[in-house]
Image 1: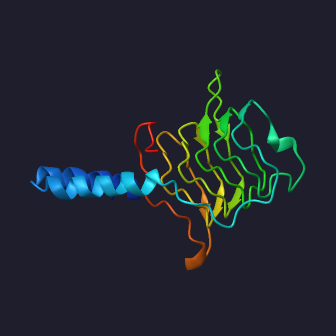
Image 2 (image 1 turned 135 degrees about the vertical axis):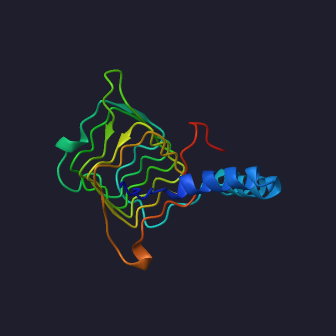
Amino acid sequence: MHSASPILLSNAMCAVLLCCVALMCGHAQAATNYCEDVATYCSAAPVCSNVGGGVSFEGQTIENVNFGDKGPGYLLGADFSGTTLIGVNFGNQDLTGATFKEAVFKANNDGTRTDLSNTTLKGACFTGADLSGADLQFANFEGTDFTCANAINAKFGPMVTMTGGPSKRTNFAYCERRSNTRPR
């Protein structure tokens, strides 16, 4: 006799499921209200807190750069807000306090993802970011903020580490698996 394995759903998948169930059960208005709430909340692009003070790459397009070669502490509090990152290597860097608000993570022409594997992302901010081309395997999260981020196709496994108490929880509020179009 086979026993069923539990199905693990992300918050985003639960939100989509909630909308679908509400629609199927004749609660179209409830589903519409929830989805409008998400769009309204995320259109304001929540503010990143406890970040900054480091080198700024804001608004740039950075392709195939290896930040993994930079010395320890080089990217502490770095600002990558609105930056397009294509095949960039952050591997093993400490990105504590860095902000990637509305940044776009892409793979390069060879298919190499923007690599955040084995990074420390304590207090880092990814609000409104498009993580579809990001590799976050074995990253360390503590108080990391993924509010309203697009995590479609982002690699989070086979393992990540999330630490911290109630005031340092990693936030996936409104982090959804959706198309690359984000509300503005």
